[in-house]
Structures are given as structure tokens and as C-alpha cells.
Image (cartoon, rainbow, N blue to C red):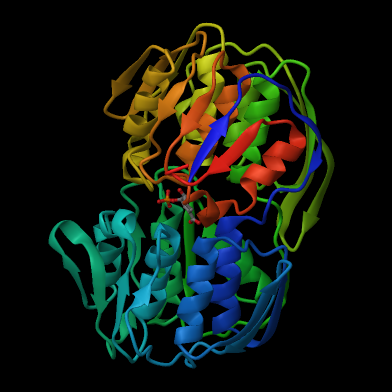
Length: 436
Ligand code: S3P
């Protein structure tokens, strides 16, 4: 499937983008491990979150839905998962695989985690190392890649782990394994990362401590089922924040967006570039901050992106690189080597597409330098990465010829319905199958 986007246009109207992917995954995991029923609304019905649902169903958890974002999970308690009959297929979802590794490390049964071509090439040593220290036995392919074969019946002990990289997935894997461990498990992170696991555990009545940057919990407690209202995903909203910022005449209101401070780097970076963004109706829902975001077109300028904002915007760089391409002057990103191990190598993928569209850029080991300029048209590759596809789709608003974006199927992992929502707001995008 490919996108063809006619150049120009502006973005107008109001929209609620689909539910937050990180929170959707966690709602299923904690709901399954809880005692009692968990009712989720606003659940992301994207392929990644559905892979997590399928995995827990395969381990004997009764999950109703999702239907129009509603999911009901009948929790089995911390000791209630059953051995899956087959390897658990996590599709394209790194979050599912890494967080599940933490949960599975503490089970009595053995399990195996596999995924699609992209996921099978992603690094898993980052979770294997701390989980092994806790007593897990995990076998992986060369270089710490999937499949992960996790032995059953090993008792885990709480450890303290200093995360070598700013990764919420690794932090979460340790905390989730910590639920099954003897004693106290804790982590420190080199920079704050998204804290949805900690917030949601507390929402399920599980105590999580945070003292001087040490995040920890004690094993052996229990989770109480609860209701979860998943906010709209700021990572999906980001494409429209950029779209409206770069397209003259735009004004968009994005409703009910999660604005957890560990996720709002994209807002801060766009504001530094001169974007016109307003947060309205700020509120807290189920322990997560939410707001409506009003964004209007504004001339952007290139900036040096502050390093401390990098982990807080880690999934938004494909969109932000398009903002940088439309900005006046140079934008410099450093300290973002994690981008190289996402669904694709996002530094290389974005650099290639920007070059195709006539935007000068210089690739760094840990970032990208982009000279703002005039976007031409052309055909760009996505490397089967959902966020690369959506970033180049919105770039067409400022291009002077059609942009053709190849291999867009993976958009459904995080943003089902992206093309129709974007079309309704003013993007001239059509979808064709690759032969079309
Ligand atoms: C996620 C954490 C981030 C992010 C990913 C979702 C999560 O990954 O890129 O899309 O839900 O914990 P890292 O923890 O690897 O940075």
C-alpha cells in the first residue's frame, strides 16, 4: 500500500487521534495481571496493541473487545497466566516484546517471543541483561536478537539496575519482572523517560516508589482491576502538530491528547522553533495529564534541539525533521542514537527521504543536521516504518510536487485510519496498493 499526496493545502478542523500506544499496551498487561475486571476506553485498535491483546489471550486471559475503543479484561492475578501453546508473535511491536519479556521472566512456564522482520532485527540484550541479573534464563539469537526463549520456573530476586540508555521499555521490563521477584527491584535512568508504567501500577493500587531518581517496587503484592481512559496519542497528534505548523492558513484543534510531561518534548521543541501552540482544558484523567491542543500555522526557525528533550520526544523525530525541513535555517539534533534502533533506523530513513525531496542534510552517528529549504516532490521509501510514512505524507503540504510514499501498510500499527482522518482535515492523500 502506498500514499500519494498532492502538494499544498492547509489543515483545518477538530480531531481526536487514536489512543496512546504505550498506555494501551500497559492497560492490557496490567489488566491481565490484576485481580478483578479492568474496563478500558479509548484503546488503540492498532496492530501493535492488538498483538499484546492476542498474547494475553494465548495465555488464557479472557478479553472482550476491542469494540470502538472499549476493552474489558478479566484479570487472572499475578499467578494466573497459563502456558501459551505456540510462540507469542509480537508483530512489529518492540514495546510488546520488551515488556512481555519482563512479565514472562517471572512465570512457571517457558515461552518464546517472535515478531516480524523488523522486530526480529531489533536489540533485546538491553532487557536480557537486567532480567538475567534478576535470575531469569533467556536465550536469544546472535547479537541478542529475537526469538527470545524464556525458561520457566526460575525464581527472580529484586536487583537495582542502572539503565545504560534512556529507555522506558527497559525500565518497564525490570519493574514488571519486579512484581514477581523476591524483595525490592529498582532502576535509575540516565534521563527521565515515559512513566506510564509507574503511573498505571499506582492506578492498580500497587505501590511504586520514586526517591532521588530511583524508581522501585517490592514484589509479591497484587493489582486491583480498575477503569482506564486512554488519552489520544501525542505521538500520533505530532504529525498534525507539524502539519498545521508548516501549512499556511492552518488551524487545528486536537482533542483529549495525553500531555504527560515525559512525552511533551515535541511541544517544547516546536515551541522553540516558533510554532503557535496552545494547551486548553488541561485536566488529569486516570492519573495521566490530558489537554486539547490548538495549533496554527507559524513560520518556523531552525534550532539546536536541547539534549534533555530528546528522550521526551523520541518517537516524534520523523515529524520534527519535516518541521525542520520547512524551517528557516539549520536544525541540529544530537544525542539521539536510539533513533537508529527503532522500527527502522530513523536517522538513515529520514535522511534518505529528505535528500530525495531536495533538503540538504548531514547524517551524524547520533543525530541529523537539516538545512531548511524548499521541498520538491518525489518517491520516498519508508523501510516499513509507520512514522516515516506519516512524516513524509504531511511534508506534502509544503512540497511543490506530488509526494509518493511507498510501503505504508505499517501505519496501521499505531494509527489506523490515518489517511481518512488526514484527508478530512485537508491533506490531499490517496491510498493505492503498490501495483496501482
Ligand atoms: C515506549 C518506549 C520508547 C518508544 C516506544 C514506546 C514504551 O522506546 O520509542 O515507541 O511504550 O515504553 P524506548 O523505551 O526503547 O526508548
